[in-house]
Image (tube, rainbow, N blue to C red; front, side):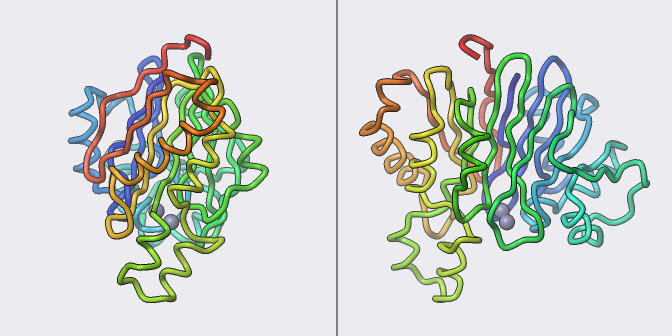
Amino acid sequence: MHFCSLASGSSGNAVLVGEAGRHFLVDCGISGNRVLAHLAAVGIPVEELEGILVTHEHTDHILGAGVLARRLKIPVYAGEGVWEGMEKTLGRLRSDQKKVLDREVTLAGLHVDLFTTSHDCRQGKGMKITGEQGTLGILTDTGIVTDQMHKALMGCTSFLIEANHDLDRLWKGRYPPSLKKRIAGVRGHLSNIQAAEGLCRWVQSNTQRVVLAHLSEENNTPELAMRTVCSILRDSPVKGRCPKLKIRVAPRHGPHELIILDGENA
Ligand SMILES: [Zn+2]
Ligand SMILES: [Zn+2]
C-alpha cells in the first residue's frame, strides 16, 4: 500500500492512495491539470486512477473533482449530503459516475471505513483505509476528536492527520474574532496539540509513518507543527512504543515522496 499527499491546506487538498497498480484520490481540491502533473512527478500513471472519494463539499476539497472525473471517466464517491452541496461546483457527470457513500466502500481494491467529522459542512468524513500491506488513517477538517475516531484510528500503520494551527498564533493573529472562533471551535480545525494528543493514543508499535496535513498558512508553519507534535510525542508513551516513527509535513503546493508501507508489522 502507498500514499502521497499531492497538495495540502486551504489552497487545495488531494491525497493519492493505492496498492498494486490501482489507485484513487481522497479529495481533489486542486485543478485537474495540477493533479496530472503531480501524479507524473510521483510516477503514477494517470490511467491507473479508479475514482475520487470526497470527504466534504468545501472548495479546497472538490475544486478539480468534476473536471478530472470527466476527463478520466472515473466515478466520484461522496455522502448524500456532500453531493447536495457540491453538485453545482462539480458540473455535469454521468449518472454512473455519481456514487453515494455510506459507511464503507471498496475502492481500487482497498477497503475504506468512514467515520463522521465535526466540521462546518454538511456531512464531513474521515476514514481508515485497509490494504494488504497496512492501514492509513486520514483525518482533516474536524474541530474535535471523537470516540468514533479513536476507535477507527487506533493502531493504523500510517496517518495523514490535520495539524491546522498553533492556538497561540491563531488567537494573537490578525483574523477577525469570529473566524478565530470558527477555526478553534468544535466544527473547525485541529490544532497542532490536538493532532499530537490524538497521535499519542493512535500510534502503536506497528505504526510506520505520520504526515501532518492541512496546515494554515497564517497560523502555523511546518517547523512549528513538527516541533509541537514531536515534542509531545517524545514526552509520551509513543517514544517507547514506536522509537523509529517517521513524521513529516505535507507540502502545501505539491507532492512529497510516495510513502510505501512495506507490510512489516502491518
Ligand atoms: Zn479543508
Ligand atoms: Zn473544510
